[in-house]
Length: 452
Image 1 (cartoon, rainbow, N blue to C red):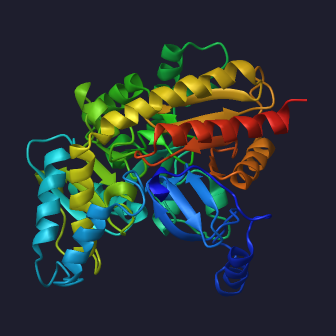
Image 2: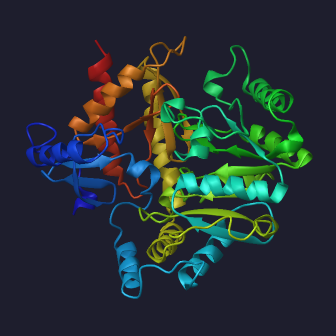
Image 3: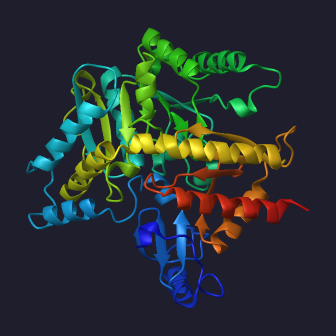
């Protein structure tokens, strides 16, 4: 079975002839701005593996950029979507209520760790939509116009979320941008000020946040602080819990809502259902959580969850949308959550994390180009540098590693402000044998490209 297979390249070149024909069609039919650097065209996928149209088999460590936590082609999800499709595909919630939306909202209210006793959830279609609606809800509740985001942040590609996103390579030529978005410095401890301990660095970054109230927007005009608990595109940088506690205190003191963007890090990847579960254990749960990606295993869906008093402050008609909470997506999401809980995939995430940290950590000792290994659970990043002392980013090497690995059947992806991080987002159903195969391919690529 494909789900138990190992990487295997059977064509003399990549892309193979059938894939090349499809990729040539892609170039003619699809905007060049929708880029892909991978020479393969998927035919089918199972577990953490995919087969391309030429019969090449790849191990996928990207998982649709965090969408496939339960893997490709999960049979129970297929059956759940088929069963729903036999009754109806769609019923817009502003017109006709469908029970799947209600059941999923009830489940999300049960499992999502936001601050408050009673909760409500709304559904939209993408991570960017979830983030944008979370901001709209925060503004409606507080009556304030501004938000604070962070360096390294990625929140999407809509007009507002492009503005919220730090890396402006995602926004070239797209201005002017919405007003009312202010930026503080994220606690990137690997690149903290020289000579600082972690504790000193946390205080430094809190000072930088407080500085926004003096130099950007007065606190009384700030509706929300929006944080990725583990930055995705920013390089898989986890927010230190002591920093989160301090941010929570600041928000409480100043009447500001704390929004956690768990679009990429949610649904088991951290070793808990949500990174915010770790926050809640430390008494600093967020007010609003935005989720997406693995929520429905590949069917477009996203969610915003908050306590009832926040949600009920929104003026009717200002949130929602035609396809939000689509019936097929809700059926898939309910099954995804059931599988994660029943099959103990949070525990599997921690097991995979231990293997990865041991292996990647050993590379840090063996190869001078490996500067840092970090993350939470199996949302892990390997930061590559030209020199471990200077920490100069090695973007060029990471680009070469991506291409060298795919030639040998491993799909990896870059991330980070400097594009010098290899991110690990493998499906949680990857086998130990497949993990070892991936380790071998990536380490061989590092040796080939750097060891003289």
